[in-house]
Image (cartoon, rainbow, N blue to C red; front, side, top):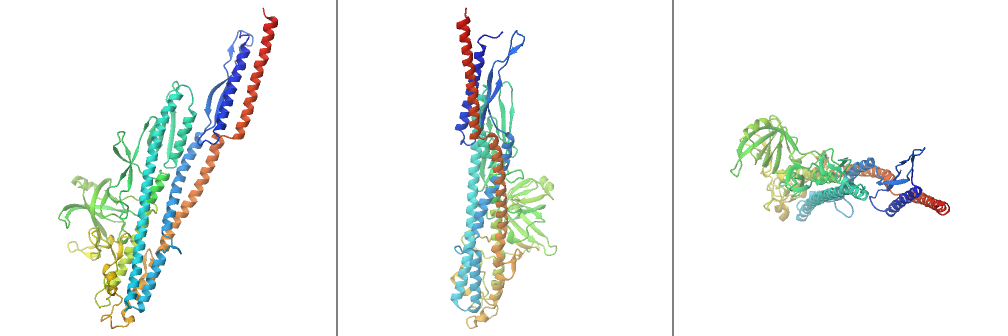
Length: 626
């Protein structure tokens, strides 16, 4: 039989439980504007009934607050993390592509390619009627110098942006490492608290907020499993791209390792590759690949813009090995590559030294050459290796694929650098060929106008291109060691010093004789061909030289438009998921106000119960007490 005063205990349980509910509601209201806070609610249950030796068998013992629970739906978290990673990638591409697009702008306030090029061939047209005039020649050469300066500035801007992206990558990796450390620390705190039977709601919110931040950088996968029902401990695992970043109390770190050599010819120095570190901090040799299909997030967007080459890296097939001696007298092992995908010297963007992948074997090289067989129409590359390949491996590698760099299907900075270089090489070689075919003001053979600044401070003569090799009988069209147009880039293009110092050395005619005594028309028959080269002949990507900017703008406009569309779409998706997420875990002030009234009424009724019972017990004790 229950105690006579059992009713007071039941009333007290109501006071205690609803006091807890009111306090929890007050905590929700206080955190209305707290970022990442998840609404909490009290789990109210009927207290365990008591068995008594009476006809009704058992009696209720009141109410109890079994726990204070965090209201959160993991499904919406997963949706948010996935969408947030895609939004991070698109937003990053949008921001940096807008900068690249701005570099190519030709406006009233900024003289771009079209303006500068138009001035150059306008001066060329003037030269057609004033070829004997020193000032006309000097004006044209000056405008040609402006074109070279434009390409220098464009290359410098793109390189600077690539260096900026490289630094942002370093910062993002540092953020990832910092988040990993924090999450592992929070995991330990959560397990300590929850093993004592209390839910660590605020710590779980803090951890989820960190994962939200991480999801903008890389794609995340989260799993949490109960280790033991008795202990309350859980195993929390946070993965990125299938690799564990955090496993409960353990965390792994990433490191940015500068490349020892460039991948693309126009790359900035010291671009980072990312590797996983061992527990002791050593490089594990396991590379973090940001360009895989499963990868999304800001980090992928940064690498896409920094390294994107539109899939135009060098590829071919191993056709054998041989040995040879270079001009420095050093003997080299040489790998012969057949069926190359790049046959045009103007579009070669491979660095003159680096690493070539033969099958699955990666070896270094410090020079390469390309030869053309007029009989068969075949192109063959020869790479001078700095790492020896064993005799046994040679047979295994025969017929295997060969590649330099990585195929990244995105038009990033390397792609636009390659376009600048490709146009320059095509245009400069065609212009220089016409100059070499003509005569200068003195009747002497013409000289090249466009050249490049060599590493030693001199200028390239471009005399070793398309030379017949007496040993092989093949035409050498490219060599990183020889003086070919491969050496000409947007960063080093300039005008021949000889022509800058003496404009009369510019070839404007083909007829022989003393140019000083000939008429301007006779002095300028070559100018017509030069003018046609600038405005009529299709020399690059099936367009004329003066349309180069429109060609580049059309390339970048497609990517900018795509980035804008996807950014808008994923922004809408993320906003919709946030609304769904908030509807579950967010604090609604109106709902909390209703809960306060509800719990207040319940508390008041519990108080009324105690008041009534007090009166009953007072009557019982004073009126019927023994």
